[in-house]
Image 1: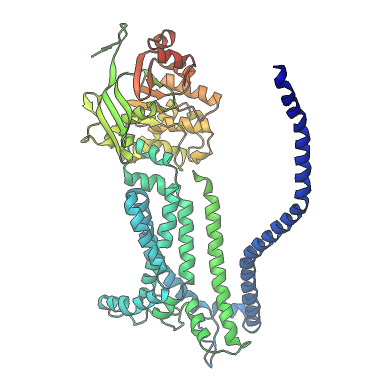
Image 2: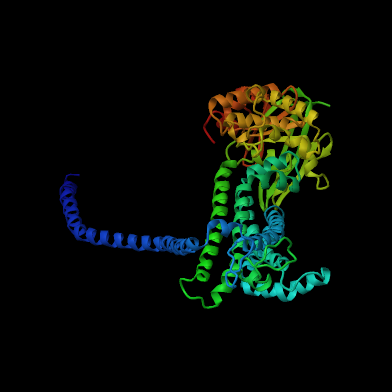
Length: 326
Length: 261
């Protein structure tokens, strides 16, 4: 035993010294590198912040321009005339600046689109979430989502050159440009917005709720309609709102297939211009900056932004209100 | 018809499990289970985690049918009908055997509609009948006095213990023959647990109860019969007093005395 003691002792006595040395060295080493690290961290943080800030800045800039040009517009045209005049003829000699024709056109095409997309999207979502097997869902869902990937101009010509002639065989009074076919095709385009988000909402309903329903002797359909659908309503209503925003803001399909005549519309068989279609139409010509015709683009654009903003606020409120539902 | 245990205990059987094997895909979770469930008594299924007690419980209302790849072998006889037979509709089985889950799972509906759910899925929509049944079930679950003035409130505003009693009311409203309880108090505090236990012992006059529990004390407190399961096998079944006083199996003794599990 005695012979083994000295090396152990020396090791023990050396260790604290070595530790101190190590600590000292690391202390010395980290001091400059800490500075470098801090600079690196800060600069990365700044880059990240700028990336995030750029989208906010863009939004603010767009809103600024929209409001600035609209204000210039409203110094010449009263808000009352803008909201109540039943004609929109800014490019004619007898100029009228009533937004109603464009607004009704937008609402009409959106309504037709939602009449198609909400039932079909919801049914597709219920099927995919509650009935389809995993394999089938993996195949069908991407295919459905592909609908949203088709360029809208293709949809526009599909509506104009295929759907309209087809519909004219059933309804001979249908005009060549009409809001019905534009709305129908737009509805098909936004189905995946509804089906995908609604399906996610329903699939995230806890399994326990489904089992609770099945355990009471409910069928698959009863469980889907009476438990899963109401439980997922916040996500589903968010999907509807998003789809509505999409329909209101959709441009190419309506510009191509719904016609460009701004008239107050009452019937989807008519042709009519939407806000977006008007903006496209006018932007294509060359209007001198600062003229009232030029400013109409911004007034119409602001109306559109306000509509989608209101929809998004409603959507946000709905999602928040129903968030704790399960 | 009566069943006799080895030491002369006699009871009336409600359901009989015969040579039951169960597979999750290729994994065998239950191995040759034989068990007779006494009528209008509380039977507790105990055993360490993963022993298959919840799996066995969920065979009784064919919950395993909801997921692909599950397979039963053997029989569970309910009045001489094998409820595991492929030609038997699982929905009809669930109409007769209710279930209360581990985590309270009220639907995102009103208190009233939660309880009425089982009747509504059976196509019963007559308001007067529903009103009476809902009140009866809520009284049966000792919840009526707390909620009678706010039946139209959302069920999720209730406390955890109240939610679980609501789920019990939901299970009772359809006059089930057996109620399955899957660790019904494991998500609740001790006071709520006590009220649920009291409720369950009151219920056994009306209905056969099969309960999975992790708590030895709970099994000892209010069950009449206890089945001990280990690694997918049923090792021992007896009157609860007998089982806890002198377990005949070494594994049982180790488990209930806290040496394993």
